[in-house]
Image 1 (tube, rainbow, N blue to C red):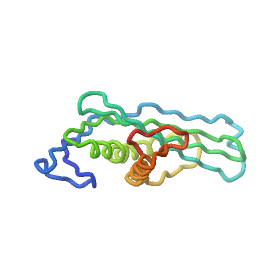
Image 2 (image 1 turned 120 degrees about the vertical axis):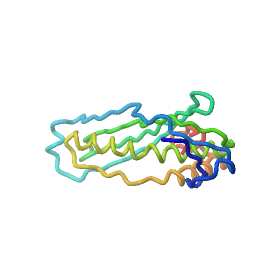
Image 3 (image 1 turned 45 degrees about the horizontal axis):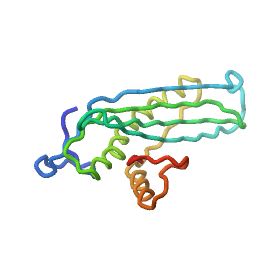
Image 4 (image 1 turned 90 degrees about the vertical axis):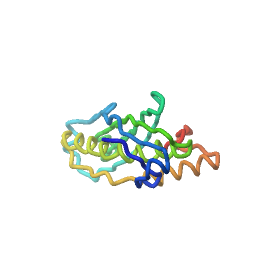
Length: 172
């Protein structure tokens, strides 16, 4: 993909107006896992499956103006109190971001980059579940902008952004 100049709302902005550039360097799967701990008995179970989805993300600077963002999506399916399957993917990307102020950089890494990574993670999870012998699970779109805004509010209130007490360090 070529250089893009992106304003925080996702619209293109003239380079001379912002001086900021955004570039996708690489998108890749960092880690992928699928487990069916109760196979083959799980395939004969009758009942309504219960699905739980967890999201996590982290970022790190790997060079000047180059950042890695890792979006982790975990789907746990239980049936009759037993784990049917666990699917997890760490979808990662390397992004070039230059010319952003601290707030703009935080928003790009915390909302815009996960928005780019999520469709790849969603496809990987879907493929694993079907290949594992289970009915398809269609993950709904996620509003990372809203999650990012929520994390900003939690940081402003001094509350940890995650239930386990860890900070997200600017990520939703």
